[in-house]
Every structure is written in C-alpha cells, then in structure tokens.
Length: 488
Image (cartoon, rainbow, N blue to C red; front, side, top):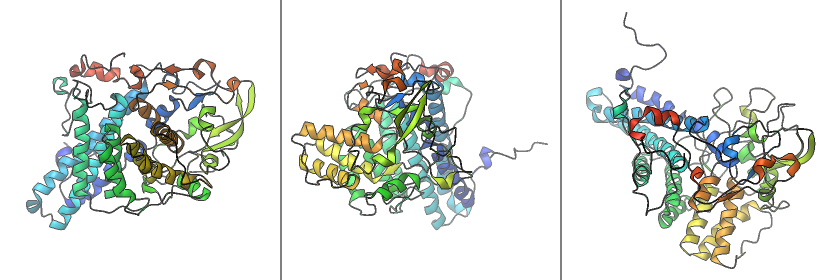
C-alpha cells in the first residue's frame, strides 16, 4: 500500500523525460505572476517619501510606513520565504535539466530536445537571478566595492535542491560580493542558453530580457560602463519604442500592451497572481469601479509637484482627483491610479487591481543610460537619453533642453526616475544606493493624512533601509547567529 501522493511529484520520479522537462517549464514561470507585482513593490514605495498614510488608514504596512518595522513583521518573512521557495523550485529544475542533458543519449532524448531543455534551464537561471537580486536589494546594504567582502553582508546562496531537517547543514549568509557574483553568474548562464531575440510583450525570457536584468544589476553595483553596454544593446536593437501618446501610456497599464514592454508576465482571469498595490492606493469597496476610492495611502504633494500636470501624459494615467473621506473629513484628493488593473483580468464588474507584471521596460533602460552617463561625466550623452524619455512622455518637450551642470543633470535624472517608476518598488533602494536619507514628502492636505507619520524622516545609513532577517529564520538556522542586520 505504498502509494505516492496524487497531488505532488515524488522527487526521484520528477523529471525523467523531455516531456516532463517541457511540462515543468510552467513551474519556472508561474511564480513570476506573484513575484512581479506584489507586496515587494508596495511595501517599498509606501514606506518611501512618495506617499502619506490616510488619517484613518487601517495600519496596513503601518510599521514599515512609520519606519518601526522589526524582525517579527510578516512582510519580511513572506518575501524571504517566498523568494527561497522560488529558488528551491528552480534549483530542482536546474538539477533535473542538467541530469537530462548529461544523460540524453541513454534516456532517448534527441539533440533538438537537448537544445530546448538547455533553454528551459537558462530560464530557470534567470528566475534564480531575479530572486537573489530581490533578496539583495531588500536584506543587504547597497553594493559598495570597498565593503562587499565583509562577512555576512550578503544572503545564503543555495544552488542545489537538498531539502533537509538537519539545522547544522543550513547555509549561512555569504558576502555581498559573493551574492552579486552569483547573480551575474546565473545571468551569464542564462545568456548562453536563451537564443530567442527580444519581442514586445514577450511572455518568455529573451536575450533582451537577459540584458535588461544585467543592466539593472550593473547599475546597482556602480559598474556604469557595463550597464551602459547592456542597456544600449537593447535600445539599439530597435525592437521596442517608448510609448509617446496618452493612449499608448494608458494602455501600458490599463491594457498591459505596450511597444516598450520587453517582457510581460502572462495572466488570465482564472489564474491571476498578485497585484501591485491597487487595493492600498485605490481601495474602492463601495461601488467597486474606482469612482468612490477609499485609499490607504495618498501620493504626497511633493511627488505631484514634480510633474508638469498640464503636459506630462503620465499624470492623468498615474493620478486622478476624487472626493475622499478620512474619518469625519472629506476633501478632493489626488489618488494614485497607476494600478487600476486590466479589465480583461477581472472576474466581474468590480475592480480587482490585477495587471500583468512588467519586469523589464524600455523606459528603465533609458533611465539607466542617463544615470550611468552622468556618473561617467558624459553630460551630452546623459542629457540625450533623459530628453528622449521626456520627449516621449511630455507634450511639446524641448528635446534640446540643457541642465546647466552635471550636478543639476544628476538631480533631474533622479527626479525622472521617480516620475516614471513610482509605485514599482524602486524608490527605497534608490535612496539607499545614492546614499540619501528619507524625508516624507509634504501632504496634499494635512487634515486628511496621518499626522504621526507625515513628518517621518530618517538619515542616510539608517539601519531600517535594510529589511530584517525574519525571527523565525534566526531561530531555526544556527548559522545565522550573529548575522542579523545591525540594529534589529
């Protein structure tokens, strides 16, 4: 009576044929539905300088917004364990695919099928690189070559699927240099295996997606010239174009279709995955159609004032003015509407705020080019890429605009990064890697927002720029003794 479970794979019989390998490919991509577009983004931006908690907000992410988060917060443990679950899954896939490739002849797998399995393995390397980068940007300090070899400055780096209850064999933290080396090695392995050229709105990893991820990693490492090389390779491939009309910018978010999407995570209304904070930013529990919002968080006046509200085509897509209630107060407030969700992914007339995640967009690569060229003191080059993005987004923008000095240009590039990527989870790590503090922006209306949190300000280097290693992990893993992030 020794039967295997009906609802799961027994490891030794998991992936034994080409068809098994092809079927398991779904398990490589499926976690991305909740990985891209989730609390990973929402926590980071709602605790930044860009949003105020509404006066009667339900304390959702309140400890993060107030910069009082600690080792018991469920958001940190959720991200930590989900990322490592993804890593465990792709480690199993990589091990299994490697075994099929090494034993292809004996298993009757053709040369053509081997090539496809190598592609599947490359895709698994990409997912692992993305998960390790997510952990590094949240649980580690910004990359600094001078400090990158400090002990326990990185994250654990399991690369084999070896589940065990033996706590003595659990991995401890590595150095930050080892962590980023692992990420780059995985990207390099993916690059060797993924042969598909880029295509707009691709549901699968392509060569362009590989380059876009590595450009982001090099940006975070301060490897400006290498980031430029990868970003430029995608831009000059001419397979994508910046959205440059109001309808095109709206469709990028409301319809999940854009000429600048390098990759788009496929979803349908029966298999949706996560949402990028629509509930927290809109939260229409009354009519459910976005016309009666009751948000937990409101964009700061400081953020709103960064936009040319008349000519910036992003502004009416990202923001709408509605009459909002906070306790006994009511007032017209600008609400963050970037993540209304795709109507085709709704299960009924009520908004569910679900959209297809966009892990790599052409606009980010223009911002990477501009930032890196500033740091390389190429003022003309940085100005060109900044102005090209602004020309696409702002009606009547003067593409020959200059900024007076390298420092002024640097600030404009950083401002543009805020305006373009707001809500997508980049802001706190950007402040951290730029060596800046966080001072919450001015409220649109002080009577409508939470006075205790409106004036939160933390200096650069504050220990809470890093997420804490979850208490449950600290308790379970003896290798973590003395390896908690300082301050927690």
